[in-house]
Image (tube, rainbow, N blue to C red; front, side, top):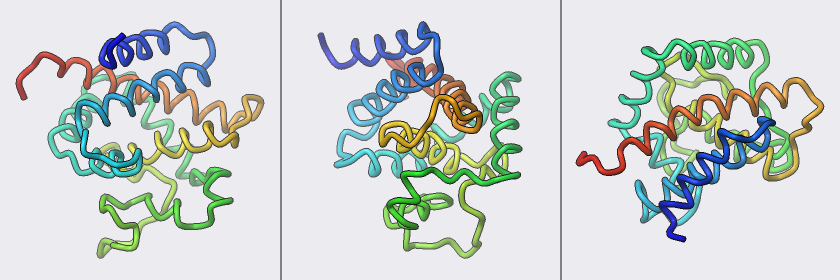
Length: 183
């Protein structure tokens, strides 16, 4: 089976699963495989692919347009923003790794020590156009889940995984629609 077919199968399987933890795992597998095979084949790590994605101006424009034109997606991001405005997203994996991983919030660069002139809070989505932190949210949920720091019995963890899935699924739909199109 070729990788492109496997990516589509993971995406399809994610939509058919019953729980959001399984849905997110399959969607994330499709997502990172797509990024590293189709968008950024030169990326030497998942983090490098994620940082390239944060700087992808065309994809940023296309996804943010979806956020503003698809009411369900917009409502999903509004809920995420509201939840993490009240208490910023802090995953257990990041607590263990110390502050280095947390530095990637608000950071489009390949080095988290490169700071922008404006200091912003980490662990929040600052607006419905905050593409970089939307991407970081997906990666943070992935880190938690894959490193065993998410508990399916905790409401906050359930919320994060559910909305990471719902919002990432829309990105995967967009990415898969690019297949076959000349861009």
